[in-house]
Length: 613
Image (cartoon, rainbow, N blue to C red; front, side, top):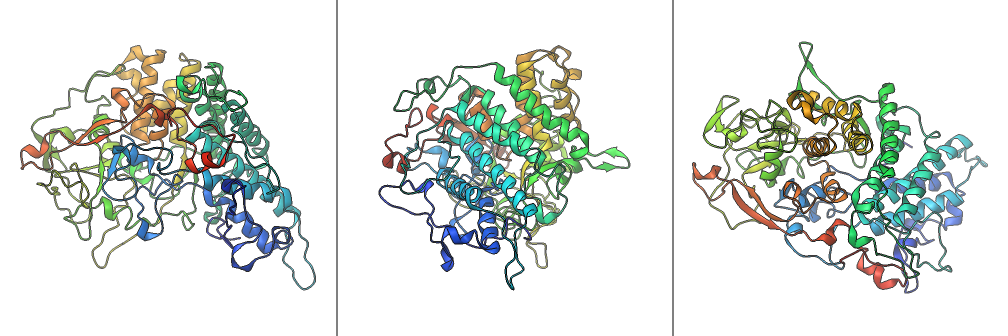
């Protein structure tokens, strides 16, 4: 069963009929001439194939640009999210213009609904029909009790995890904890948010002691769940349950009810922050017991922040809680889809179309750990200047890019910076203010984070490099724990402790060193944690969901709609460095939650739509 995510022995076809719901129906007849479902589970090979296919909904957050011509468009199980939040702009791919148009339930992209409900049904059928299969006759293949028990635990986890991914996107959803036959009423109403959370939580609590109790070290099986993975999902489940979006803060949702009058969203319950803090503490305690730690590199025995924030994404390491196998279905060979679209056009084969928004550029700290402008929790840095030029790596560049923190240089490629292969200074094409569809940066920046600096397109050259596609890493959970603990117990010293551990790895001072009055100040600590999350997790697929669960998508510091900026692409060598609007995006309050897909609403008498859609 080498590399469980890569092995897909057959494809499940989605049945359709006027009286069935596609997302609940899996045909008994399988592709490739395989037998009926009943007979599948008499055969070890077919059973393993069914089992393997349950895992194919694991997200791949490395896929930020995926074109139709190279294997299919982006879905909600990739990472279109970084391109439709205040992080990057893709001048290429499915999500290039997603945020600058009005959408409705019939044309909104990046749904998870049908894919995950199909896989949940597969999981339910497996849990109901799979069994121990002894060897028979001359066929020595079998599924013994040990293998069967592991399969059941893993599939139970995946069913819970897929419900979590649906909750994250849609809020209240139908709970599917068994399979349905076509003779049953398949028109299942949405369960309330609290019911969904409690269902997922109970399932996770059940499997946590049964999963592998230590991280998996075999590359071929690293995509399988472990105790750490389940603890991570449980922590994220409760942080969503406690956050304003699902916890009474989305006023429009409080009146949403099923056709029988059952309310789907409850009033705010502050006690949920205590549950979130405890669930995340369970994760942190497990990590601190020697299972995970922040990734760090050292030079001459001294922490090297630059190497640390770069190397974190280049190989499996002990910060990663869950990622696809490095040789697996989701293992990143990026090459054309990532590196080429982050390579300047002045370099061989470069397209240079994945641009970092000025708003993200501005939010990185200076090397002294202070922001470029005053915030509620830190004063502005005296090192920052918007005008003139300064030295970076021996080159005169705009002062706004000098003396910034290591995470900035690991994320943002800017004009004048030397390209790591050619060592040539890079200046971006100008004179095309109205061309936003071509393959070039539309705003004078490129994304640099996760770029492998051995990859280049010269001949001979390293054209691609496998890396883990990270789903969860410890740094995120330090920040989530600090967030939940701050809401539940702001005076707890762990709030700043875990934020400061992230800052230390990045080479910048502790928050209370820069501002002693922040200690125990819930509002100031909240803003500091959100800023740290913005920077530390930039483009990793979390920002989109964070600003929504916080209900801040309409605020100046986290705006999702309005004008977005970069450099002046139509300017000359001097005026290029002027902040210039290059795009106006749309955000409506209904976008705090995704709509139930229109095709499902058409077929259902019981499903109700999310507010505003």
